[in-house]
Length: 513
Image (cartoon, rainbow, N blue to C red; front, side, top):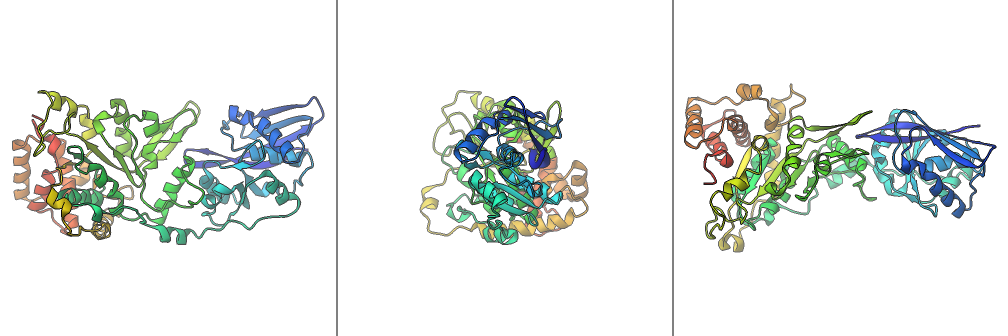
């Protein structure tokens, strides 16, 4: 008689329950797995046979048929080892089949019977709750991750013998419990770095505060050693804390990518991802034969930092253009498509020229004529169009480095950022898809970012005299609106507009000579 067990498959950041049927019948000893399994699933029989024999159980020397339904969905990965092994044990009478259907069972088996961790435990647990499945049996390394879902009993096991005892001897360990809200509030905004560590660079801190307040993308341009990377790494510390929904959403993505450690139950701080400039377009955006989230999805609700921006391959940078606008990545395949959220702040850093010393106050640039412009042109106009703040970073002098004066802490700056975000939350309450000023459409900019005649004159002069491009117009107004929000000003004043204009360095004609 066939035995039914439940497993699960993860597509994108969502899971789908898979019913696995195992039937053992007389005939020539052989194994058959049907239902669109990939090679990793087909190879599971060899791992299962070794795990059972070394753990004191027998592998039936009969015809074994394993059906994985729905049969039209491809099953991938080694996480079905424990599920299939449970079905074989139940179908051969080595464990009682009663109660097996009350649980989702997932895990990869080692040859000695140990249970190895899997990816996507959190979305699997969420789907189990939706389908009113009683519990989830999985590797103990993934137990805390799955246990943040309430109303599902989560049991972590280390060896296949623990599973057998679970169903034959009633030796059920206590379900793993995680107080989700307590876990969230205990570790919220718990960062190792702080803006108080940074000496000088007050104008750069101000620009990053504006970026954080309005959700604006920014690019830092300056010589080596000026502090671009150090400042960028501290940006998450001044962003508003994650709310519980954002934390769960972010944790799902990291769970699917297998980025959570055994001690992690919930991602409670804003992600900061910094891929190397040799990264491929698939690694950055996501995809592959078995689609996985890329760096831009792992940075969801946080910061994606691209250091040495011109050194990235142009094709890699161009694939970011659509996700930056839509805040979502869609990976299409012949038989399916998966969506990964990718709402992140882009912070880029670059040298002003190949040698790094163009516009340096003390050192002379060694680049030949035209080389600087060629270097800057590696970053395309359409990508720069999506970056609101162009910030010139200058080296810190000795007096500032040696000063004992305390800088503002991240907590103090974050308070101002949060107040600004609350103003924007009220402003966009009728637009659920918009959370901050940077996400405004052109039509909304015209309605919300209204400036007086003096401001219009100032902006007109800036466009003409500084050679600002037409694409800079909306960006300047968005940034000016954010600066006004930081000042709790209802109107965009001339000073706010002037400061916003100052952040369009790369739009100036002949900026690089």
